[in-house]
Length: 169
Ligand code: SME
Figure (cartoon, rainbow, N blue to C red):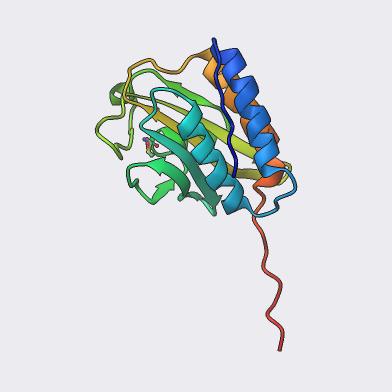
């Protein structure tokens, strides 16, 4: 059983504890789906005021839904579309105070008001994006961006796609 009791007075401390827990949870585990699943659960449990937390994986020129917590979401997002697609195309974090004012925003949950999407980049390019949604407008600020950029940096080598060995026989 994992029990990470994250209690922080401010966001900088929250992300320090969260990122230490994410590093410990994914240490030595090569399976990217298992790691994304555990980190999505950790974010959901630890970061206040979210209605969605999870990952989209970069496959070809599309983002494909990965492990998450929250309501069922759209499955495929072409690069360049919506907030996630903008993060994938630009490889830059997207911090959106009002998703309804963002051109091409994809509404997976009508409750979402603000959104933070951070690309996860490895030497080989874009692996995935981390997506956080909140029902509160302007929920995310520079501390959330910095904390999630650091999370993406530490996760990148632990989210590399696994190539199955050929079956024997
Ligand atoms: N709102 C996102 C789509 C993904 S959901 O929020 C889970 C976007 O515009 O890319």
